[in-house]
Each structure stands twice: as structure tokens, then as C-alpha cells.
Amino acid sequence: MNFFISGLTPLTFLCASEIVKPGDTVNLVDFKNTWSNEDYNSDRDNLKFWEDLIADFYNIRIKRQATIRWYCPPKQIRTSKPKYLDKLDLHIDNYSYVSDNLFDLISAQGINRKLISIPEGASCFSNVNLGQKRFIKSGLSKIYRLILRKNIEKSHSYLLTDADGQIKKKLENQKNISFYDHQKLRKGITNLSKFLFDKFPELEEFSNCKFVHPLMDQHSRNELYEYLEKVSKKIESENIFIKPRSRDASDYSDIESRYNNFKILPKRYRPLPAEIFLNDKDQKYIGYYSTLMLFFQKDKRILIEPLSNNVKDLHLSSYKNLINFLVI
Image 1: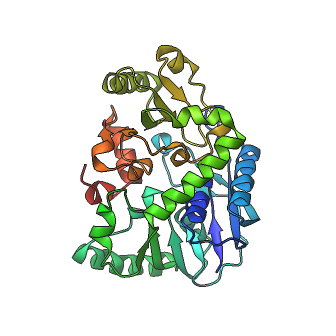
Image 2: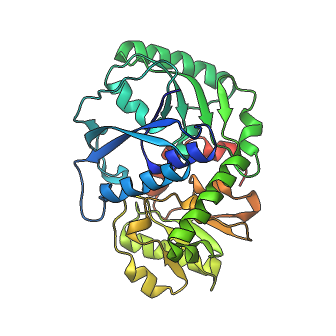
């Protein structure tokens, strides 16, 4: 089997779920964003360090492929689709396993293949439809592929599911769909957590927090203050682990100085998946729709809507259909 992945989270999930086996090789595709500023530009050498360390833990071989330059501003300021500045030079066979975040790139290069999609995160539900709607969209997508010469076909899709199994129950009868085993995935991540906490003891304090929150950096700083004030009132004096996105290089020391119970992950560790910091205690999720919320049971999730409709729409577009598959 051939595996093509971009990103540390899909790599971690793939290994932890045991879809990829010890000794297998995973091809990694790196993206270099030519749009950047000091608050939105991840350290690619740091990312590679974590990729190598996690691959070694799972006994997976990494083969680094092309670094693709692209122009991709954040969604909240983007006025057009991302532009790929380099041609992809990969040998991708039919029925290769490819992470969702590579499909647009492969399609833009005109590669004609039947591929198996593996999840980048909860965005994997964006193209899943139920009943007649699924049939209609499937037919239309074939027409669009012919018109646009985008001949990528998902012959099979692996999806994540949630801690309660709601998503799997709703979709398990759909054709050409399989699921990462949630218990196996969680166990594989927990084993990785123990390894990382032994190697980097300073990480364990983030795992001991009562609440977990994925930071929504699409808010303006003033909106973020207002949003986090709502979070603070919900959690009272309990400690909360706050995980910025992997490429978020912003300085949040001003927020930590406001709330001494807010534990914001330092820049060095931000490429790590937030799921590494979960524990088996009475931990709760607070935030909006995200991949991380899938790892909490229904009664452990507290949803707070973004303050602006723009940020809300961005999240709902990224996690399309998740709102339909989860009972909150």
C-alpha cells in the first residue's frame, strides 16, 4: 500500500489507528506558504522534528517528497482559491491512500487516479451526503470532473467517528466508507502521549487541565478577548488547556496574564495534535465545531458560538456536515 500524507495530525491518526503498519513507508508532502506574517508562519524545521519523532515511535519510515510552494492566505482574509506555484512530481498509483488535504493539489495537477481518502480531521465529512442528496451530488461531481478535467475519484473513504459512535451509526450503511476504530485510535494516541510526556515532562501540565479548548485565531484580538471571557465564566476557576493551531505563531502572553488558569501551548509544541493532551479523567471540551470535539462524549462538550458570523461561517464550512451528524 502507498500512503501520501501532509500534516502531523493525519500522520498521527493514521499511525495510531494502525491503518499503517510498523515498517511501512509513508510519503510526506510539505507545503511552503508564500503568504506569511510573523503570527501565521509555522517553523517547518520544528514540524519535521515532530514528524520524525512520532514516526520513530510508531516504527514507521518517512519518505519526504516534494515541498510545494503555494499562496494561501487565512480563510478570513482570502479572496480567491489557494494557488499552487509548483508542479507535483509524485508517483501515485491507483488505490493509494491519500490524506484529504492533498486532493485539491493532486486534482489541480491533472493526475487521473482512483484514490482512497484518509482523514486530515473532521473536515473529512464535508463530502459525505445521505440518501438521495448523496446520489445527486455524486452525479454532479462526475459532470464537473469532466468539464474541469479533474479526474480524481475517491474509490473509498476512511472517516473519523466520535466517542459516542453517533457518526458511525448514521453512516455505517453507506457504500465505500470505513471508519478509523475510535478506541484503537484513542489508545494509540494515549501510548504516544506517555512517550512524549516522559521525554518532555513540561508537557504533562497541559494534560492535567479540567477543560480543553482549540483556539479560534480567526477572531480579531478584541473579539478573542471577548470570546475567552465567555469561556472563563463557564469554567470559573478550573484550569483550561488552550491549543493554538499548528501554524499559529502568535504571542498570547497577554491572555495568560489576564487568566492565570489559562494554559496556552508554547510555540515549540503547537504542531502536536491537541488529542495528545487528553486524559482519561473527567475532562471537558469547550469551544465550537472541531476535530477535537470528536474525542469527547456528548455530555462532556460545551459549545460556545463564535462572536462574528464570519468566523462562524468559516468553521461551519470547514466542518460541513459535522453539525448534521452530531447531537450536541
